[in-house]
Length: 398
Image (cartoon, rainbow, N blue to C red):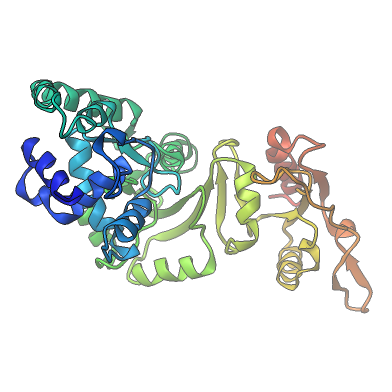
């Protein structure tokens, strides 16, 4: 008998619904066990693997032709059901994380290793007898990893992962400070896609939402100020870059409330990684510095100085425009912050760089026009950046 037939017999013996005894689910079981046609069931393993690995295994070893874009089908039709049945478990990462993995539970591994042997019937009876308990145990493990959060006074839980950790901080730390008494109209979850979605209020405010629209991660509304806060929670992708602003503007073309665009980061290192992609006229909030919000253009203009920053024409343009408006301008060297992946630093940018010219064509050097220049590492920007910004603003009566 073939391994695919064996897998179907095992799933049938486990009283799995007929839909979850199909070829895809059988391939999932074999891939999770690491079993090719030649290997006996006694050599099954339960290593952590991705859905991508399951697809590749089925295609390479069982002649399947599953496409890479069928991962969501695998997730919904097999992995979700197997996890709920305590056949497999996940590693607790966010489902959109590249490190998200599944494996057979230890109990399931022990059972299938006995398939075709004398102890199979005994182990099957034991597994089925304790199955409800196993389901409860593994469901409890998943629940324990979830993060409780209070949204609009109601209790919810976020799935585990950095993205949701940051969203929790936005709700609990950002909102009370910068959007007091606001209502959360929308917040997603990496598993439960729309955790909170007040469609009636969104529609009343003029949102035109289709199935193809990707909502910002968090939407807050201050009725007192008639302001909407569009917040992207960024740990690996998705900052408020010009293209994203355009998408949200199209979605909210009929919205008359004031719009505030915010990119939120867990820490300054992640901010540094995305800083040059962020759109002007937007805000930045860093969970590690919850009392401060960085304005990328406004009354206070902050220039994060990397190796080449001051040589970039669009940076020079925005600095000159801020100076013309009478705004405070400060520079912060960020070259000494270590890269999260390589732990390396970059070379220090030259602040004696001409960023424009006066009416008599003499150069305007950044170190001459800035209200202050600091080093994020040497001058302890973590603790002092807010003070630097406010001191510079006071010089200009802001």
